[in-house]
Image (cartoon, rainbow, N blue to C red; front, side, top):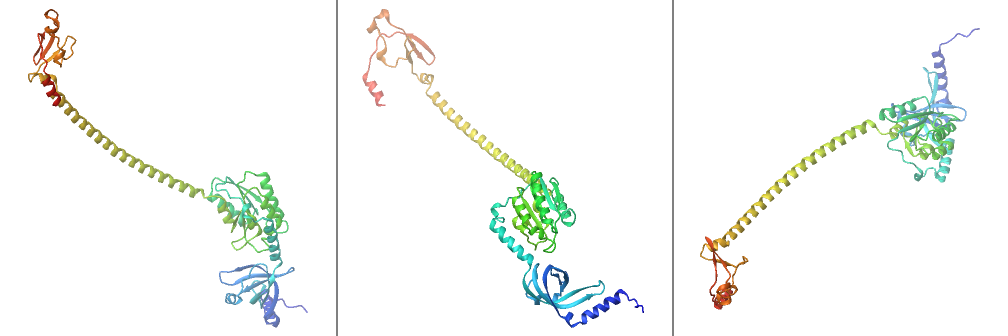
Length: 397
């Protein structure tokens, strides 16, 4: 007897009725490791519960999250309790979680902690070993998947922010068993073949702890530590933290932020340079104006000072000329005095210097010049009388 066919919806409804009415499925207790937890805009929390062979989707309703009194994180070993719910439209099922109990740290978390402690003791995270990221790189290398959102975001931000930097892409596997070796080899290759690179961005977009695990492996950490080229680690999202982040010279929260940290914004730099140029022009103009004002003021003070000095000098000259005029011999002669000079033109002021007839005889008398206010007379001295009392009176004056 042939079975009458049913629709897909009828089958899913049937399965939902069986599962949701089963007493075990109504409050199942399932143990496993948490992977890729995320909170949706609705407020519900979604994650995958897995073991080594299988996995199941879980959802914690928004109203239940506050009752958990714990934060669900990647790698946690937990026991969840809840009911199985069938999504009829998608033909899938999941656990609607009512409670979560932590069972311990997952295997990946344990491996992460062990490697972290080992490398930290060896000094791979030592800040003293970290190289500075150049402020104005000429060439940037990018080690990531050749496809996907991460490489597009990095390239877009590099070229949008900086129109002079050269970019070299080194496509690698970023997930899976071969990813760690591929990333480590690319870092070594970039150092060996492209020493002109100023900085390397190493990373990938977000994902679960398993997706990001290549960046938690020892070969990648040692390749980063050995790199002569400074490295920016840009793995996952802000909440993700990997071994490569700790080893790198600089950590970026996301691949996009890695591009921002790698290169300066040349457009902003040009704007800043234009502002600085304008500011310098204004400052120079202001200083020139001030210098002109100071020079003008100093010139005025100099001219005024020179005029004052000239006026004082003229007054002094006039005073001296008046003194000279007052004591000029001609002025004295006009008052009735006369001057006697000898044959050599020397003024004879002492009567005892006159040569008289009494001294020489009338035949050899010298001639003297008698200068008066309106002429000169040639004279000889017959006799001269010295009066001592007149000389003493003159001394007294």
